[in-house]
Amino acid sequence: MYAQMVKSEATNDDPEKLAEFQAKIDADIKIEPKDWMPQGYRKTLIRQIGQHAHSEIVGQLPEGNWITRAPTLERKAILLAKVQDEAGHGLYLYGAAETLGVSRDELTEMLLDGRMKYSSIFNYPTLNWADIGAVGWLVDGAAIMNQVPLQRTSYGPYSRAMIRICKEESFHQRQGYDAIRKMAEGTPEQKKMAQDALNRFWYPSLMMFGPSDKDSVHSAQSMAWKIKINTNDELRQKFVDQTVPQAEYLGLTVPDPDLKWNEERGHYDFSEPDWSEFFDVIKGNGPCNTDRLTARNKAWDDGQWVRDGLLAHAKKKRARHLAAE
Amino acid sequence: MKNEWPLWEIFIRGQHGMSHRHVGSLHAPDAEMAIKNARDVYTRRNEGVSIWVVEANNISASSPSDKGPLYEPSESKVYRHPTFFDIPDEVGAM
Ligand SMILES: [Fe+2]
Ligand SMILES: [Fe+2]
Image (tube, rainbow over all chains, first blue to last red; front, top):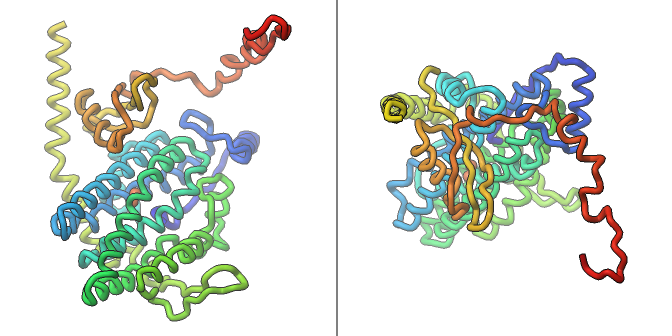
């Protein structure tokens, strides 16, 4: 997902306090910033929310790539609004992470020097306009699958950020589907582009949910703490079941010869993505890893004088104000 | 990092006649920029008609460990609720 393979931290706390804490979580009582919490809970959340925030921010790059080249003024305004929303999502999540005792600049530094990750999906390029439709439809669609249950997560600030995000997310998926539908229903060349975009984004979208976590100790702890609500496989299956009919409506073919409805299970059977590709992308070897981090570093460095200048101005104004009193 | 902008807590009045409600936080160099940023972050879909910003370190909060001493005394004072009193039907609405 936007937060993939988040390692959960072992916890070394007073067993009595731990039991009390777990009882609160089991009773669906939200944990708030000043409440006692296990070290592992705090650290795992910082990692997970931070990774989620970084994904929102880096995720602006593949779409921002097409803002100036959108086919109409209306599409351009829509895409601009969508990308602006993603900046807001990043901000809500950084805000939630900060309540755990890490600063936003610290988180930013960890993204910029590679100590923290963002979702593998944003290391794939957006080659043409059809890709922008596919991203909204599939990537935001997959994000929604994960974010909707996270509205019920145990950590109050995280839960409230997710509620705010989910309110805005449906627009993202619908504008994407609308854009790719225009192409699927257009000229034969346009339809071909739509199919090509689906071909390239299908498996990377399935990878967003992360590898199967059936046997993972980490995810068991995170689920007990309610900072992970569903298993990766559950969400991936839900995503496939939802998306296949949407592709059929467009007259597009999901690029999986083994995809078929399983009457008995009441779900689609489908092929797993190539997990070696996923681990390779996570390691930094995807098609756009270098580009993405270079762009983020450049934006940070180029913005330094603005941040410094505004702060200097604010300090001067405050000093003048105090002198006048 | 040395020069981080301070954190501001943002409160929005959703519609006229309602109170301001806490919606989240953001970083800004001063109050004026905090209001501008809050406009962009928290009211892009008509969510507000008025914005308050407060620098986060100016907020004092009660501590979770005081929950008992602070709020338990009110639990035993049921007579503060109107339903504590039986009013005869003959008296009519009260
Ligand atoms: Fe988002
Ligand atoms: Fe989105």
